[in-house]
Length: 469
Image (tube, rainbow, N blue to C red; front, side, top):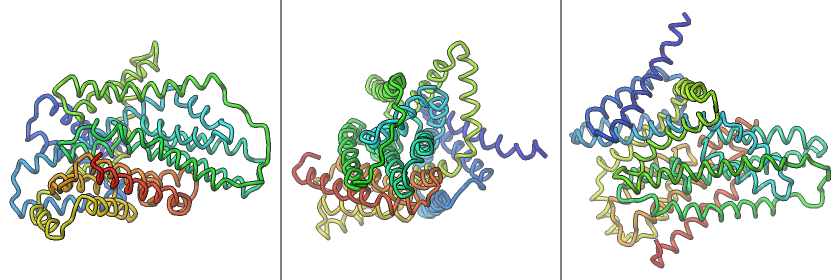
């Protein structure tokens, strides 16, 4: 009975290993049939892990299957399906390999020490510390970083807030949760390991990482400042209950700098490999992430480097079946970004845009509304942004560059990912802190998310209007 119960997991793990191996092999020797073999492995994977799938993943998977049917009916060429599967394999491989990075990071002692230092900051610095922590932890560990920091924040609440009245405890609880989730959402603006950046890069082939990500990184500080301003404005006045808090351990500050170093080294390694070789940004990323992850695990293990490395690998592979829902979303996004543009009457849409005299700015506003609105009803931004990015490039609207489209989409993505109760970030954070996703996203965070979306759209529009983007 036990061996039978384990068989689906073994099959699922093997399938994702095949997908990863295909993605890595394709870097050096592109062979079209291998993309189809990896696609078949993904189908088998979803067949044996169907219990892990949720409505959030089933909807895009059904859409992808429907588009495959339409593309077959329209007799789309085999090479188009191969291209779509290559994107699906890349995104699935990236998600799985980032799981290795997450496992290696979670095992490093500096993660806990940095989290302890950030959550122990005094009230005047707490929001910015947790916002910064959500940003850095999210860059390195994705949702695992969100979980670690929120868990530490909740523990800090339990030990350091018992003296506060219940209503002030709830206010502090809300402010700490929002600081972390807002910081986590800033990853979408620039991170080379983030899915926002990579989904746009693969859907807009002429786009380069350095075209828009440095701007997104710079603007992430403005978003953090806007969130801090809202936090200060909504903070309770005249009811501060003073109590000596346990100060942060100065020795733990070094761990924060170590995490920053990890982020810098990872990013620079990807950018340098891309710049110094013929490899694309995505190919460089697929090579750097697992290499760095295993190197980090070996460094953490010290004299037991081999044991630590194999443990990280084993743990990461064992978790592949648990990521079925996320893998479904990302693989579907890869397919959709190619097939939607292929089956859609792009030329007719372009002529319609000309007939309607649509210029760059109205198109930007339509894209912003679609990405935010569809995210609010549960369509993951990775799907919408991938499709809009591909469509925007194909339409070739005068005055609307790929850089402008990408800049707009990453900002709206960041805004909606900490607002919509149907997006993983809000749903996961809500489950961790014991509140409903509607409370954490819609009720608590509407001023920040809608404000960022509106300000970002206005700013991008002005930049396009004056010719900066």
